[in-house]
Length: 508
Image (cartoon, rainbow, N blue to C red; front, side, top):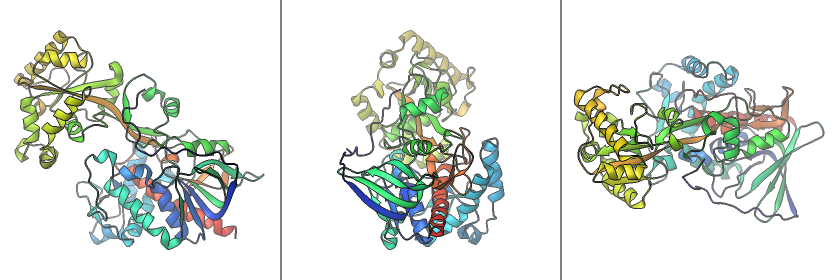
């Protein structure tokens, strides 16, 4: 398995100093991503006198920095707009999507909390808009960012919703004297003789740190950058050699899951990974946009079609059976110009709305062609075949058959809809590499509806909580409602912060 995207975080060398710095607090949070930063602020609001957040990277935000979508129901904004409470409908949709394999108490808790969280964020200055096309009227987005970021490729961040929430939380840290330790890696959970959590051990660049804490929140993220764990838990998706690229950051190595397992937690249940394809990552997002349009013709390395180009992200399943698990999207000059100049008459509203952005498509295609390996611009199909690695006669036969379908208006192989059948006849021709992609993993540590970690005897590990991508119970490989991942991230952090503070205060 090859990761084609490189690293998106600063590698840190952790020292081996023997001198140990000792700290103490009510709540320590492992991970300064979306769930971790929310958990820290909420814990402090709920009375935790001292909160420490530890992150092994040099910047807070984690994968939430790239995330976009989120849902909520029954918030004050929904009520002001006259929308009904859709908690019950969302709950049933989520449970049906996972075929009741998830924990209904956990799912119910975070959906019920979603409106409360939205109100909380709105009170901190975030301005939401309700997205009308959602039948439940539950999707929410950001009207205007607080800070200015140039977003060339949304998959690499910043995502409007995720990064804005993180920035909002970081703005709250000074108010509550929350201490953030970056470039510091937690290596071990500390317990007493009864198995109760007492703190953590960590290593910074030049010192070791022991943090005594009454409550510990694991918000360390998934394991999207851990090849061994991917193969172990998802052998049907990552068990073959092939090209796959990740959108999760390089620090997503499953540290929280490993540490929880070491103290007796149940791990490995209710897990999922959102694998999609084809994607043109980590290269030009404009070119990726083309690859996702059904106007392409997709072929494998043999130069043969193998699925309908309207399959969208589900094509990843078909790609798994193809050589090197990749494909090439082929268009001609006429289709390229059609995509660039699309307006409302094209019938494709998304493509027409992207028109201004796509004006630079030709420039990006040329850059990708000059880079080599990921895009080829050719005057003949023979040149495209050489680039793909296919026999010229095979590719020509595939194109001829596809062009016949275009002229007849019927795809007799895969029933691609007539409006997307565009012939490949006008040079130059374009071949775009498409690979399978995934964002991150979901799940790993068993919890209950109070976000408390559960051990192998079915009991709560006193003082230990798990949130976000390293917590199980809310998802399986059958992914739930749209925007569920980020919604779970923030809501689980909010709820864990409350519970961790409550536990810390009970200890005096």
